[in-house]
Image (tube, rainbow, N blue to C red; front, side):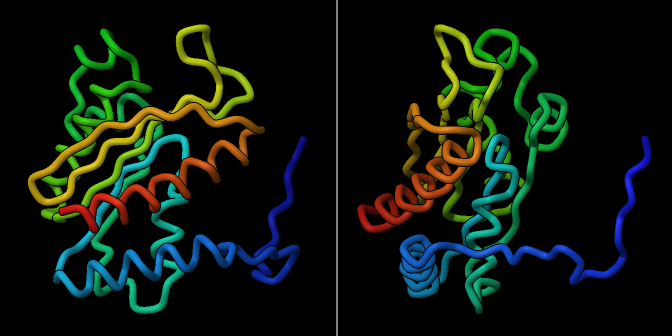
Length: 179
């Protein structure tokens, strides 16, 4: 079986866009970061760069968005962000401990004052009784404050990922306004 790829960038092109509500949230986040002179960086697993996409959808985001990593595999989490094999073995990739270590790695590698990390099970497979499909862990660093937050979202794979992206950005705004 062969697959044909077109080099014509307009062939079957569907523009990537944010809905207006999420776009407004990103604008609020960017304005707050710009006012503080801070930057944000992220590392994502199940969202596959969706948070970074949301940030870079905003004109002028280079003022406040530093960098991002998509660390989908456990190997990438270890080699790029310094998540330990012991953490992954004992707790799994979708855990409080893993997103904390991911956030520490992002901070260490980027110097950003605001950090978000995401690791979850978007489905349709991969879930368990303990960690059902839709389970997503988030790691946040805001200045000297940190938080790890678990959410379980409903919906199909795309919906879980969209919920996770929206939650990550909303929670970043919340943390930034509190600190």
